[in-house]
Image (cartoon, rainbow, N blue to C red; front, side, top):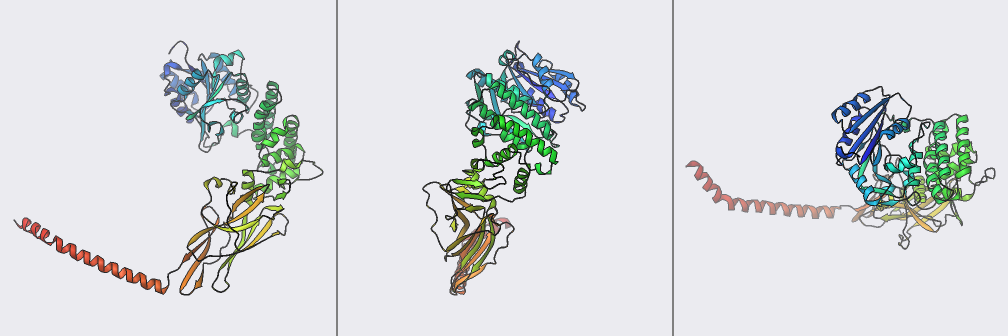
Length: 564
């Protein structure tokens, strides 16, 4: 090894076998070479075979692997701090002992840091075994970023390359009293102090593993512990960064992620006192840091939940979460000023929450409409030789629904509509012409609008999607009608006896209602087909006979050869 290795990799270890072996193998096999690499692993009182596995690697690679054994400290902060005291590399890199690196990870990140003069380099990170890792930071390729012009605040783990000179100059260390998120203060301060932060997006550097038993420390902390840790991290950030766009960019992550996780599906099942304590803690942080900029940049669901918690509306928050968890989509109120989700607490004078807390726009509108638009009933009407498809569809909107209609449309929805389940129609795109009759009336419970449509079918072979079109805040949305689990009418024959058609309504593999129409075979068609098949048979027999005659001399010659 050279006198000063390029990078010291720090590994805090506690009971991570058998994942630890893959982690260590990925380190000693790095393309940067072991002569440029130092691995400092601290066994934090493991009770499995982790300590012995570390010693095995240290014995096999004595010039590269250093191992320290210590009593259990309760988290990764203390072992990481101890490793920093003996690290000698120009850069330091932290890795979870149940994760592993891509073969070229360290070489690429060190090269990028040297080339760009970066103090922090973020290598692309992905999750395995179902672990979620935010990807927005990597979608624009390799580049330099800051905390307020990128998704960096949503990637605050310490799994990055840090210039050790920066770490020691500012005495960056991990707070050992935080059971969760102890890497965030270190990472946030390093990013604030860094002259330049670069991203390696064109190579997967880091593979974050969710253990089969989900025992990663992130998955084990209780609600109040997570609240206390998040509060301390937010207060630390506020002490480091003055109020303004940069602070908002960082703290928006905590409202959107850590705090929002405290008021999700399991919230209604918690003890009343715990729900009250969580709301009180969120309210304190919201009162200090929940600026208009943060609120307006959040998606409506999380924004409303934080606002209800801030208002101390425990019952309304519980009902809002329960309704969404149970699939009870709240209606979208349409009026001249915009579109608002009518969750509990909307325009409640006791709470005094502004309307824009409940405002919904863009893809959120599409997702909301798709989630709550359902088929109620469908059937055929057959006046004479004609056939009409009739449908009743529940759409989760109330208020000004004059633009609501239903169409049968040829062609698939664009793939961009698959995730939200619906789409905003691009400006200037011509909509399908109105056909048939459509009426709109409020649902009996007042939480939706019911569209009733009677659409005549054309005599042609075609597949048609059943879709709702709705005007919301100056844009038109196209929503496929869901029909999973709903009864469909039996296929129906219609048209003139000598030229009949068949219509069927069904639910496709995406759960959307489609109508198929096709021309049927008549006796006349059958006779023509049989005549064609007879002609083909005669032609086949004639060709077979001709081929046999042509091959006869060849076969005779072969037979004579065999006799000789």
